[in-house]
Image: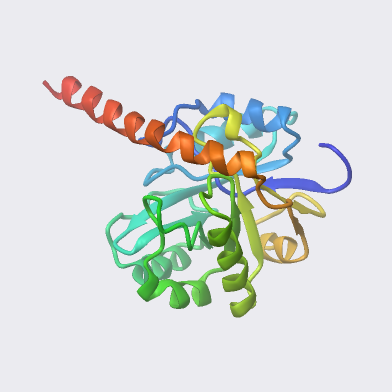
Length: 236
Protein backbone atom coordinates (compact mmCIF):
# COMPACT_ATOMS: atom_id res chain seq x y z
CA UNK A 1 0.00 0.00 0.00
CA UNK A 2 1.14 3.55 -0.70
CA UNK A 3 1.00 5.86 2.31
CA UNK A 4 -1.04 5.47 5.50
CA UNK A 5 -4.33 3.67 5.69
CA UNK A 6 -5.90 0.96 3.56
CA UNK A 7 -7.18 1.52 0.05
CA UNK A 8 -10.56 -0.19 -0.24
CA UNK A 9 -12.21 -0.78 -3.62
CA UNK A 10 -15.83 -1.83 -3.08
CA UNK A 11 -16.92 -2.85 -6.60
CA UNK A 12 -15.09 -5.28 -8.93
CA UNK A 13 -15.94 -7.94 -11.51
CA UNK A 14 -14.21 -11.08 -12.75
CA UNK A 15 -14.78 -13.35 -15.74
CA UNK A 16 -17.70 -14.85 -13.80
CA UNK A 17 -19.65 -11.73 -14.87
CA UNK A 18 -21.16 -11.77 -18.34
CA UNK A 19 -19.17 -8.66 -19.27
CA UNK A 20 -15.99 -9.33 -17.26
CA UNK A 21 -12.76 -10.83 -18.58
CA UNK A 22 -10.45 -10.93 -15.54
CA UNK A 23 -9.74 -14.19 -13.74
CA UNK A 24 -10.02 -13.87 -9.93
CA UNK A 25 -6.27 -14.44 -9.53
CA UNK A 26 -5.49 -11.71 -12.07
CA UNK A 27 -7.91 -9.33 -10.36
CA UNK A 28 -6.11 -9.81 -7.05
CA UNK A 29 -2.67 -9.40 -8.61
CA UNK A 30 -3.78 -6.18 -10.31
CA UNK A 31 -5.25 -4.91 -7.04
CA UNK A 32 -1.99 -5.61 -5.24
CA UNK A 33 0.03 -3.89 -7.98
CA UNK A 34 -2.22 -0.81 -7.72
CA UNK A 35 -1.82 -0.47 -3.96
CA UNK A 36 -5.19 -1.77 -2.82
CA UNK A 37 -5.34 -3.44 0.56
CA UNK A 38 -8.87 -4.79 0.32
CA UNK A 39 -11.38 -5.31 -2.49
CA UNK A 40 -14.98 -6.41 -2.79
CA UNK A 41 -15.60 -8.89 -5.60
CA UNK A 42 -19.13 -8.32 -6.84
CA UNK A 43 -19.89 -10.28 -10.00
CA UNK A 44 -23.27 -10.01 -11.67
CA UNK A 45 -25.76 -12.43 -10.11
CA UNK A 46 -23.22 -14.96 -8.84
CA UNK A 47 -20.96 -15.26 -5.81
CA UNK A 48 -18.73 -17.83 -7.53
CA UNK A 49 -16.02 -15.32 -8.49
CA UNK A 50 -15.94 -13.73 -5.05
CA UNK A 51 -15.64 -17.09 -3.30
CA UNK A 52 -12.77 -18.11 -5.57
CA UNK A 53 -11.03 -14.79 -4.93
CA UNK A 54 -11.64 -15.13 -1.19
CA UNK A 55 -10.00 -18.56 -1.12
CA UNK A 56 -6.98 -17.25 -3.06
CA UNK A 57 -6.63 -14.29 -0.71
CA UNK A 58 -6.86 -16.44 2.41
CA UNK A 59 -4.15 -18.73 1.03
CA UNK A 60 -1.74 -15.88 0.24
CA UNK A 61 -1.32 -13.09 2.82
CA UNK A 62 0.53 -10.91 0.29
CA UNK A 63 -2.69 -10.47 -1.71
CA UNK A 64 -5.38 -7.91 -0.83
CA UNK A 65 -8.12 -9.06 1.53
CA UNK A 66 -11.42 -9.93 -0.14
CA UNK A 67 -14.99 -9.02 0.78
CA UNK A 68 -17.27 -11.60 -0.88
CA UNK A 69 -20.25 -10.11 -2.64
CA UNK A 70 -22.58 -10.05 -5.61
CA UNK A 71 -24.19 -7.38 -7.79
CA UNK A 72 -27.83 -8.33 -8.20
CA UNK A 73 -29.97 -7.35 -11.18
CA UNK A 74 -33.23 -6.34 -9.52
CA UNK A 75 -36.35 -5.23 -11.36
CA UNK A 76 -35.44 -1.62 -10.52
CA UNK A 77 -31.69 -1.56 -11.12
CA UNK A 78 -28.57 -3.08 -9.62
CA UNK A 79 -27.76 -3.44 -5.93
CA UNK A 80 -24.66 -4.94 -4.33
CA UNK A 81 -24.69 -7.35 -1.40
CA UNK A 82 -21.45 -7.43 0.63
CA UNK A 83 -20.39 -10.23 2.97
CA UNK A 84 -22.69 -12.83 1.42
CA UNK A 85 -21.68 -16.36 0.47
CA UNK A 86 -24.69 -17.48 -1.54
CA UNK A 87 -26.51 -16.20 -4.60
CA UNK A 88 -29.51 -13.92 -4.25
CA UNK A 89 -32.30 -14.25 -6.84
CA UNK A 90 -32.36 -11.69 -9.62
CA UNK A 91 -35.47 -9.94 -10.93
CA UNK A 92 -37.10 -9.05 -7.61
CA UNK A 93 -38.25 -5.50 -6.85
CA UNK A 94 -35.25 -3.57 -5.55
CA UNK A 95 -36.65 -2.95 -2.07
CA UNK A 96 -37.48 -6.66 -1.68
CA UNK A 97 -33.95 -7.50 -2.75
CA UNK A 98 -32.53 -5.14 -0.13
CA UNK A 99 -34.68 -6.78 2.53
CA UNK A 100 -33.41 -10.23 1.51
CA UNK A 101 -29.77 -9.10 1.61
CA UNK A 102 -30.24 -7.92 5.18
CA UNK A 103 -32.13 -11.06 6.13
CA UNK A 104 -29.12 -13.09 4.98
CA UNK A 105 -26.70 -11.00 7.01
CA UNK A 106 -25.24 -8.95 4.16
CA UNK A 107 -24.54 -5.25 3.89
CA UNK A 108 -26.33 -3.20 1.21
CA UNK A 109 -24.13 -1.16 -1.13
CA UNK A 110 -26.03 1.02 -3.62
CA UNK A 111 -23.94 1.30 -6.81
CA UNK A 112 -23.95 4.06 -9.45
CA UNK A 113 -27.34 5.45 -8.32
CA UNK A 114 -27.44 8.22 -10.94
CA UNK A 115 -25.67 6.68 -13.95
CA UNK A 116 -28.91 6.66 -15.93
CA UNK A 117 -27.10 6.18 -19.25
CA UNK A 118 -25.72 2.84 -18.11
CA UNK A 119 -27.23 -0.62 -17.83
CA UNK A 120 -28.39 -1.37 -14.27
CA UNK A 121 -28.92 2.20 -13.06
CA UNK A 122 -31.21 2.56 -10.03
CA UNK A 123 -34.75 3.50 -11.09
CA UNK A 124 -35.74 7.02 -10.08
CA UNK A 125 -39.04 5.97 -8.45
CA UNK A 126 -37.27 3.87 -5.78
CA UNK A 127 -33.94 5.68 -5.53
CA UNK A 128 -34.68 7.66 -2.37
CA UNK A 129 -36.17 4.65 -0.55
CA UNK A 130 -33.24 2.47 -1.59
CA UNK A 131 -30.78 5.11 -0.40
CA UNK A 132 -32.50 5.29 2.97
CA UNK A 133 -32.24 1.53 3.40
CA UNK A 134 -28.69 1.15 2.07
CA UNK A 135 -25.70 0.79 4.38
CA UNK A 136 -23.29 2.52 1.99
CA UNK A 137 -23.92 4.61 -1.13
CA UNK A 138 -21.42 4.58 -3.97
CA UNK A 139 -20.56 8.19 -4.72
CA UNK A 140 -17.61 7.50 -7.03
CA UNK A 141 -17.79 4.76 -9.64
CA UNK A 142 -14.72 4.25 -11.80
CA UNK A 143 -16.91 3.75 -14.87
CA UNK A 144 -19.11 6.83 -14.44
CA UNK A 145 -19.95 8.62 -17.67
CA UNK A 146 -20.69 12.12 -16.39
CA UNK A 147 -19.56 14.44 -13.64
CA UNK A 148 -23.21 15.18 -12.89
CA UNK A 149 -23.93 11.55 -11.98
CA UNK A 150 -21.04 11.64 -9.49
CA UNK A 151 -22.17 14.94 -7.99
CA UNK A 152 -25.75 13.71 -7.63
CA UNK A 153 -24.53 10.54 -5.92
CA UNK A 154 -22.62 12.60 -3.36
CA UNK A 155 -25.76 14.65 -2.75
CA UNK A 156 -27.84 11.48 -2.30
CA UNK A 157 -25.46 10.12 0.32
CA UNK A 158 -25.37 13.43 2.20
CA UNK A 159 -29.15 13.79 2.06
CA UNK A 160 -29.64 10.42 3.73
CA UNK A 161 -26.64 10.62 6.05
CA UNK A 162 -25.01 7.52 4.54
CA UNK A 163 -21.31 6.60 4.30
CA UNK A 164 -19.77 7.51 0.95
CA UNK A 165 -18.33 4.51 -0.88
CA UNK A 166 -16.27 4.11 -4.03
CA UNK A 167 -15.54 1.28 -6.40
CA UNK A 168 -13.70 0.94 -9.68
CA UNK A 169 -16.44 -1.30 -11.14
CA UNK A 170 -13.51 -2.97 -12.90
CA UNK A 171 -14.28 -5.40 -15.71
CA UNK A 172 -10.76 -5.43 -17.17
CA UNK A 173 -7.38 -5.42 -15.45
CA UNK A 174 -6.51 -1.81 -16.30
CA UNK A 175 -9.61 -0.51 -14.48
CA UNK A 176 -8.75 -2.05 -11.09
CA UNK A 177 -8.24 0.59 -8.41
CA UNK A 178 -9.77 3.42 -10.43
CA UNK A 179 -11.94 4.43 -7.46
CA UNK A 180 -11.46 3.64 -3.80
CA UNK A 181 -11.91 4.79 -0.21
CA UNK A 182 -8.94 5.11 2.13
CA UNK A 183 -9.83 3.69 5.55
CA UNK A 184 -7.89 3.31 8.80
CA UNK A 185 -7.53 -0.48 8.86
CA UNK A 186 -8.68 -3.67 7.21
CA UNK A 187 -12.44 -4.01 7.64
CA UNK A 188 -14.66 -6.71 9.06
CA UNK A 189 -18.37 -7.28 8.53
CA UNK A 190 -19.00 -5.51 11.84
CA UNK A 191 -16.97 -2.34 11.28
CA UNK A 192 -16.96 -1.79 7.51
CA UNK A 193 -19.74 0.81 7.55
CA UNK A 194 -18.09 2.87 10.30
CA UNK A 195 -14.68 2.68 8.61
CA UNK A 196 -16.09 3.87 5.28
CA UNK A 197 -18.01 6.65 7.03
CA UNK A 198 -14.75 7.90 8.55
CA UNK A 199 -12.73 7.30 5.38
CA UNK A 200 -11.78 9.48 2.42
CA UNK A 201 -12.95 8.87 -1.15
CA UNK A 202 -10.37 9.23 -3.89
CA UNK A 203 -10.52 12.54 -5.75
CA UNK A 204 -13.09 12.47 -8.54
CA UNK A 205 -12.47 11.22 -12.05
CA UNK A 206 -10.50 13.34 -14.49
CA UNK A 207 -11.63 14.34 -17.97
CA UNK A 208 -9.60 11.67 -19.74
CA UNK A 209 -11.14 9.00 -17.50
CA UNK A 210 -14.67 10.06 -18.48
CA UNK A 211 -13.65 9.99 -22.15
CA UNK A 212 -12.18 6.50 -21.77
CA UNK A 213 -15.35 5.29 -20.04
CA UNK A 214 -17.43 6.43 -23.00
CA UNK A 215 -15.03 4.67 -25.36
CA UNK A 216 -15.38 1.39 -23.44
CA UNK A 217 -19.18 1.25 -23.58
CA UNK A 218 -19.34 -0.63 -26.95
CA UNK A 219 -16.72 -3.09 -25.66
CA UNK A 220 -18.95 -4.09 -22.73
CA UNK A 221 -21.89 -4.72 -25.07
CA UNK A 222 -19.68 -6.77 -27.41
CA UNK A 223 -18.35 -8.86 -24.52
CA UNK A 224 -21.87 -9.75 -23.36
CA UNK A 225 -22.89 -10.59 -26.94
CA UNK A 226 -19.87 -12.85 -27.46
CA UNK A 227 -20.48 -14.64 -24.15
CA UNK A 228 -24.10 -15.33 -25.09
CA UNK A 229 -22.98 -16.70 -28.45
CA UNK A 230 -20.50 -19.09 -26.83
CA UNK A 231 -23.14 -20.35 -24.39
CA UNK A 232 -25.54 -21.05 -27.27
CA UNK A 233 -22.87 -23.03 -29.10
CA UNK A 234 -22.09 -25.07 -25.99
CA UNK A 235 -25.78 -25.99 -25.60
CA UNK A 236 -25.99 -27.45 -29.12
